[in-house]
Image (cartoon, rainbow, N blue to C red; front, side):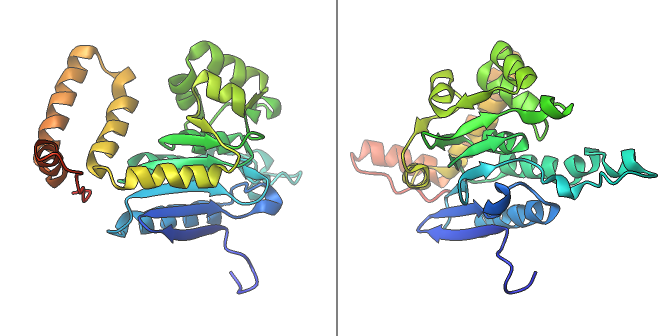
Length: 267
């Protein structure tokens, strides 16, 4: 990358909050392989910084993310076309690792959807813990319009967030889901005129909370549908026991007993 080429993903720290921005606005922040790799590097950077306790993900320009940049595939007619145009490798090598990294991040995440989130862009947004969207933002499952299915976790996350009936209709029709309707249906937490400012405010609130408990909550809630209640009770017990050995648990209880504000460290 030359000095004159803008970085595809930007990283900024605002106190205890890392703000990561997808930065290919001329292409609606559609993903290249390099962009995936840089995003995961920025997630690693935030997680490794001891003073960072929450992360905001957003997009530059008028869109959040339009999914895969099709220039990453080769549709030139000729021998090997089907192999060259196969989206499977880029999903396996880039999109799936990005979704997995967001889900495994040891920080709470807030996504600020500043415009359209289409295709895998919607999947990446849903892989974050909490979503804030601009009034003009939208979510589009564009896959069916080019003969594909939701990927980057989209077919799983849609059902988890919205239930089978709504997920099925959105995935099959490819119809646009507006921010207001996404709020009504429970896909997002908030609609805000300035979604980045609202997301940072929310992340700042999370950043002074017990980080390990927040991340454990993510994993418990995301896995709830895959276990029976009986099995889930055991997972809750074991998770609670592990958290009971943390600094923040002791600090929270002592602060409550002493009638003072807790000073959590994320430890």
